[in-house]
Length: 287
Length: 333
Image (cartoon, rainbow over all chains, first blue to last red):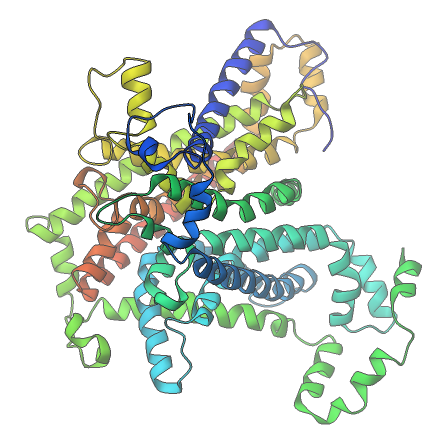
């Protein structure tokens, strides 16, 4: 990231103070919920059911032990992991081919394709949740392939959710790979598929990893389809976390501990790839 | 560069030869040869296209079809047997004098105010933060990471944390407003009654402003540095620079950013669903949860679909008007 400053002069004090105050407030706004999550996850149950206290007085790690027994969290975790990983990988593989076509070929219907794919972002999920549910049930009845209630159905659904963004980002990454490189490979007798795998993909690898992580995050956090399409056996974290609130008790400390545990994979991934995400957005924006 | 790539490639005849001889008899082999010949790029697009059709376009067409059917729980296993309803579902949804229609209108208006407030403030927070972190200073990298954290957390986890913070007895918000700052004379209920609307807005902003920050930050990197240097030599203050250089340069980023934020917020299902379950309080009864209840709780899929179609039409009209409006302004500028 290039270092830049706005001008040759140092900014005036009024600006510096505005900056300090505003940025501090925004940082507090961003961090307080994270602090609440961490500190409450270390409190015993009676401390999270009474008045909120900023500093957890007796610290306990018990919630991190109990979360696995109150609720079948491990099973939900595994389901989420399988579904999100498969969806992310499949989505990026499909998007790589589509983005390659969009960035390297001129063809009829290109604009229609790209705008139709982006337009799917506009559809309210609620509009196709029910029809998709009915379609999956009917495909299941007709062919015996269990899409409803299975991880497979959820994987197919989630992979299309991240597909538009993946195609869009990868197209911009691929366009930043000089065309001369894969043309040279084509001249050497490679087919377009080999050129893609030998030249374009290695050059755009950071972007591909960033998009994979983004696709994983999308699947990891989805709730609507997870609540419509899963059964007890295939329930994912997005729905399963609600199980900590029973009629008798809301285990807030365990909920916070579980929230932290389910956040770790995606937050880590996101922080690792944020640099690439910014550069991808930049090239998209500049174009 | 080219030489390096050639060296990476395997010796001729190993990989390429394998594909050519025995496989050419099979269908996969013929397909492969067609791709090799630089055939149409449609093959590359085919998987994406099929999946989009299966999950987005066919269900949507199907949803439109259902909106003309009298599809209740009774017909769910045999939806083709459901009688046609003509425009009845739409008439019920749009009859604002009856219960269903007036509830939908109320929900629509709630969603509009929710969207305007949440998008406006998310954009403002994100833009402010991005502009203020444009220069390098100590701690800038850490701040960026802090700002992006809310966006990285899974949405449902964020909403659960906030719902804990909004609890009446043991929540942080009441503790902060009532006991620490003394702003309110007694603790307030945040998840029922009028406050539930603001709870929803706050969570939505918390979740989305980092995205605005990310996009604007990316947009700022495209502004040539000499513009600032030249204007500084001409004596422009930093505030003038922000107003005259930074903001106009962000126009194209903002055009996309605001549209995306608008669509996300308007369609947001996760936040109200995790926060309120299926019984959203009336002041926070946003349209996605309203339609979900009409479909899955009242088991009236025909009406639910009709409402979703109306919502989609509204979104299409707003998006088209927005794109035409903003593009024209950009061309005139």
